[in-house]
Image (cartoon, rainbow, N blue to C red; front, top):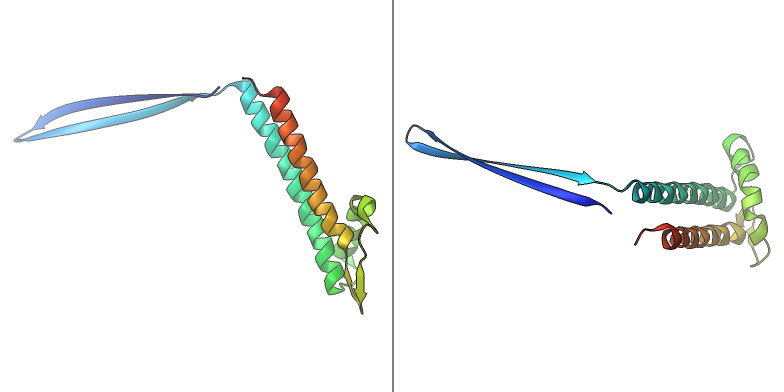
Length: 130
């Protein structure tokens, strides 16, 4: 559990005909190492989730806009193929000319976020000190 300590010091001085009051406030926090580790673990989990979502969103945009298969576009397609594989052909994808509406990528973004949310809550439930 995080404890916050607040300390207030008041000093009064006379400078000539004027009384000067100086107030000093300091705070300190005592953080439980287990709670800190739990929070860091949660941050790492969400970072990975956001990173995957950005890759999948780029894949979706590149396919939608009909990007050429060179450089970074090809790299993103190759990296995200395995992430989209479980969600392919669940909903029909529409192709119009060179544009491709990849429903698998959109569904993958939603499902990975739900899995990360579930993992985060389960870890919090079982490892949070009460």
